[in-house]
Image 1 (cartoon, one colour):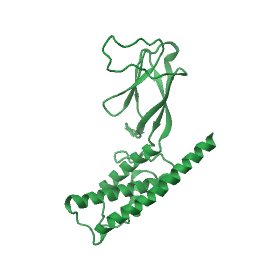
Image 2 (spheres, helix red, strand yellow; image 1 turned 90 degrees about the horizontal axis):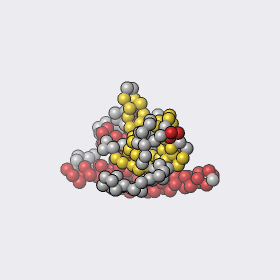
Image 3 (cartoon, one colour; image 1 turned 180 degrees about the vertical axis):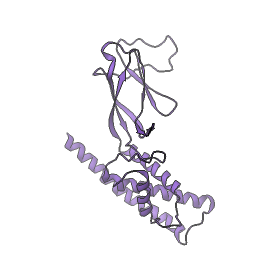
Image 4 (cartoon, helix red, strand yellow; image 1 turned 120 degrees about the horizontal axis):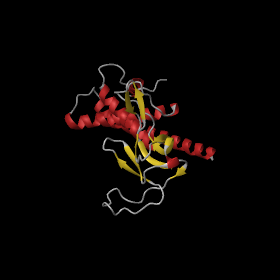
Length: 234
């Protein structure tokens, strides 16, 4: 079963009973609901991944980006949620306790190597080493960054990128998107009285309530499965 955007949208329409024109939800609205559901799922159930980076002499800044090649371009296909562990030349680094905003000349000296994070201004995180790397800290693959991240997500501008989550969670993702789609529908009603098929206005709250109930059960089952998996891993 494909996990790219178009099949997801088709399955979401089927769940919403909106597979035949005239459509209740335009494609753009369903794409937005899927995008928000992907973000929510990624926060609820992050994955752990490790970035392995080359280190040049004196290089202190490293852009952390989870990207997928698409043709000649590179698309950011997942978001980093947090850093779990940083190792340089197989030595685990502590977080630099000093602040990036410390006035010049007031930073405490650090006899050992450490790291801190900063925002690149373009959405990507930048990892800064306290001291310029040298000696065995320099070389290919010397810096390893273990991070919590969202799963790979499909996007309208990258139709070949698939969702990186487990197939067993596809139904949960579609439930999240369906609930968001009904939230959008209710907002349209409240905003401008968007024309709706007879009886559908009254059905929106009931459908949303039913989806809430289904989501509660699905999330409980998913979290229970995650706890059992961690127990077995131990």
